[in-house]
Length: 101
Image (cartoon, rainbow, N blue to C red; front, side, top):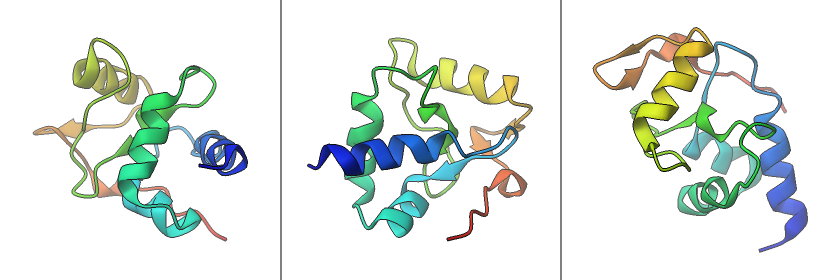
């Protein structure tokens, strides 16, 4: 995989404002990279404090695993610190980041 593309995707995470999330599929739509590849990139992220991969959720808005040993619980805590409401393990669609090309 091209390092350039990985950096573009990680940099995109920095553009997601507070109180907003994206999905693996939406990132795929933007960068033409399979959602599983996007998940792999999130997993390889060694600097989550710089590239907030916790802001990427599953296409059905469920909170999927996170790149730490605390996984979903930590991801949920980080989302809640961003004032994102989580109900029954899902992020409400009002928090969807509608980025423009």
